[in-house]
Image 1 (cartoon, chains in turn red, blue):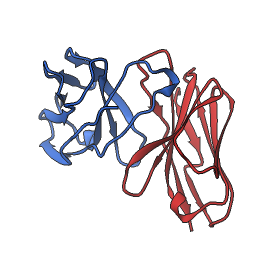
Image 2 (tube, chains in turn orange, blue):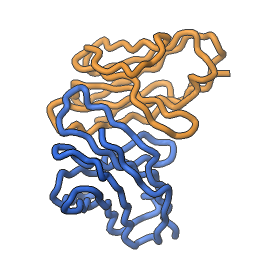
Image 3 (cartoon, rainbow over the protein chains, first blue to last red):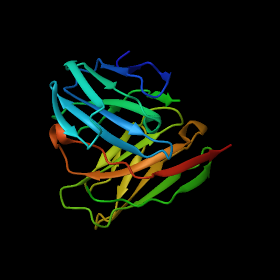
Length: 113
Length: 113
């Protein structure tokens, strides 16, 4: 199936740990995003990448480091996890040459204890 | 991006039309109106977008007032699976990789049997 996929779906970890979330899209899109949805359900952009180049960085702490090995993948690495990092993280992708309909992944629920 | 205001919630009966309003009184001339929805525990899903003409696709219809200061998303025959948070977003067209979506609080639609 063509889609945006994320792994893992759930991630429970201790404060101070380092963790990664992986995202892959097989839609042939050239732009990928990370969004964060907090406990109050607000959904906010974190990063966007176009052809492996960082385009948007919305004042996210530098403990968060996105990495795009190729156009189909955008991974999110988080260092020194804090309680406030607990949220659902959504990956999305789109084609930059269109009206930018964004396709979202199923989300990764991160819980920091 | 221009701001939008939506009522916090509404409900409708299954099989009836659901009309979801959105105000965007500060919309600029080149900004489009987009609608996304988020079903519980899933990623947001694109529904439809429009500039000034009414639009229809297999999911919904979008009615934009002549002055473009408000719009209505219409789900013609709501089903229980349409229960979700619906987001109205305004943004310029084709901003390339700078195309972040700015989500507000959305409107929670509850479809009752």
